Length: 338
Ligand code: SAM
Ligand code: SF4
Image 1: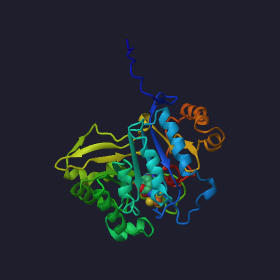
Image 2: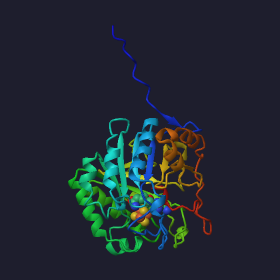
Image 3: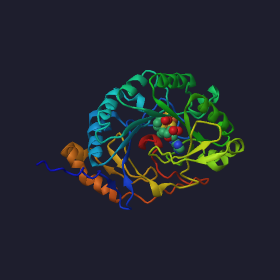
Image 4: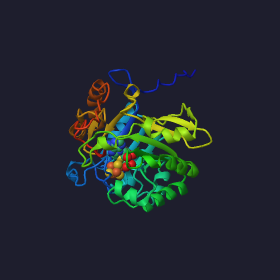
């Protein structure tokens, strides 16, 4: 008689504080074709190519993490779409969807989305985040130090044609785009996109004084509150955003408030950089270098280091955006992956 086996219990990783860790963000390159003022300095020094993991190495490390319990992966950067042969990585990772991996997503500035959208869809990417801090072409060019909004809009059209759902990421910046939040929300709603607003975080030196442009979202939302009723939603996408419905709109509004309303207690994430480092927190310098162990021992060589990383995940970031305060890390967000 055949013995019925109970299904294996779901794999799960937990950190030293008991938080379940099942979300991996991968920064596939630190390079970018834009220079957003809150993200990067104008003259950035990027990593030499010899220090960067190959796409096969990234896929193999990610594969091990999936075997250990990672269920969602977001590819980010820098700008992921500037990495040569990026599509090969998407295909390698996409093959895990339904076999341990629930979802593969992407955060992109959209400038190179048009030629990549069909490939992303074919590899199993069903939704992406596209960063767009202004709908005004001149303002967009100012914020990004020279970006062409037309390319982003073409990329968004291509994503729609490929059947990929879009969420727009907008960093709320005092005196820069705070007068555009309601317009952006209505624009997203008309196009079937969700919108997430993000508070600017003190990561890496940039030429601008971040304090001048830091805008707590509670303040940024005043015009939206005047126009719509907010309905808190249970909807989650695995990331840190809290979502709200708005009376009369179909767009969901996500809020990422690392400074004004800390969300670290529910953190489920770890981050792999293109150098092969694992960071358990965006806001700390502590990391574990996986590259040497991986090259010496293959994927299995990672397990001990991964256990160490889990055990030492910090309780919380300690961002301080007061005038004159140093950034929380020397690393820019583009290094760790947003
Ligand atoms: N280049 C892609 C993009 O812009 O979407 C992916 C990488 S970017 C680092 C990911 C997200 O981080 C973007 O939405 C960007 O606006 C956001 N970001 C970058 N630097 C930030 C900072 N210092 N504070 C808050 N958000 C930041
Ligand atoms: Fe590049 Fe994204 Fe940083 Fe802008 S936010 S400079 S697009 S990595």
